[in-house]
Image (cartoon, rainbow, N blue to C red; front, side, top):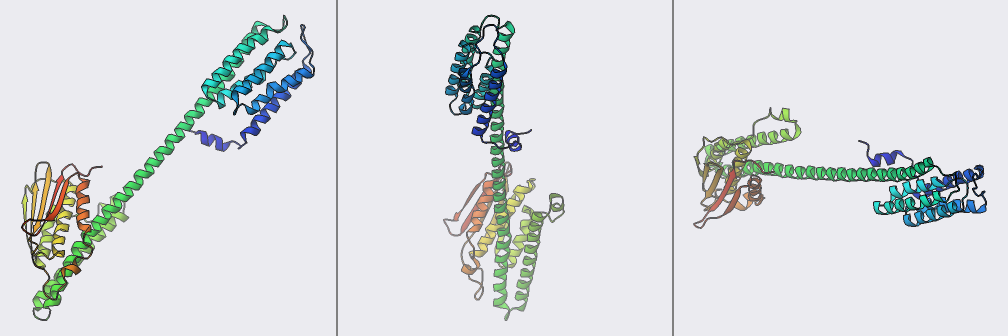
Amino acid sequence: MVTWSEVRSRLPQVNPVILDWVVAAALFAQMAAAIAHTPPVHGERPADLGAYLLSVGLTVPFSFHRRFPMAAIATNLSCLLAYGLLQFAAFPGLSLFVLLFGIALHTDRVRALIALAAALIVLPVVLLAQPSGVVTTSTWTSVLLAAAVAWLTGENWRNRRARWSAMEARTARLEQEREERARQAVTEERLRIARELHDIVAHSMSVIAVQSGVGHHVIDTDVDAARRALAAIETTSREALTEMRRLLGVLRQDEEQADKLAPAPRLADVYGILEQLRDSGLDVTMEIEGGDRELSPAVDLCAYRIIQEALTNVIKHGGRAAHVTVACREREVDIEVTDEGSGHMAPVGGPSPSSVNAGAGHGLVGMRERVALFGGAFSAGRRPGGGFRVSAQLPYGGPQG
């Protein structure tokens, strides 16, 4: 559909004041020619200087009808009434009809109706003032009908222009809302990617840091333990690279190609994390209730990431033991990760908790954001008897949008 702005852009851009003066000049030229070439009949008064002066008063008001519509119609009707009462030849109705059209187009409906009403009062007076035999029934019909048609045409154009403007405003508003939704979607996607990268890197680097510290500490006294630490570092780093490639692949590929990549981690994959952490020296146990319940992929991934990050924090803060409880209830998944919070996992000569704890703080924020997406509940804090506790409830409904 062609909009009003497109119509205006295709038309030559002319100053409205100049355009109005051009129309007024054309109306005066037309009326002057009619006066000069129309001989008086049936007792009409011959044209003289007064007729031309009244012609100026009839046509010039169009030049200022946009700014002063009531003054324009009053001037025109006054000159029309004088012209008719003086019974000059050549009926000057065209200037009034064009003025009614312009007022209806460029002003509000109230003033346009006032102008039409005033014209319908003056026109019959002017027609009745003409000499006998000049005005016929067809003259009455054509004059009054022309006034009504001119006003209705201007009113129709004004309404259409208003509708076009409203549609343009609505289109602009919808476009702005679409751009805002797009920006919001980009922001949310960036946060999701940041959470995924943090969960992958933080967990893997924590394990690598602890295992490298163990290997460095025992390399001279226990070669087998050092070899196991290096093997754990190799396995952890490879798994981290695999997950990062999967995440980057999803970002770079379209949906069809992304489906061919390695699947996202699930709650069942937590056992692999537990084995890594046990190799690192963490005494970690896990208990699952209702594990046969089918979870949505989003809930499955979220539960995996929360447990991964909570156990990573245990390593960062030097805990020796942790316990994971997962309860798949009727409407939600309850997750709880607790640790005793005593001692340092890294042996003497290994990395200190402060060095392993680099970047701490983002983990809890990321877990809280993940749970908030599902409309669930999250809490984290120290336990009264010592240690730390992370708790999350994930409804099965999926992320809230």
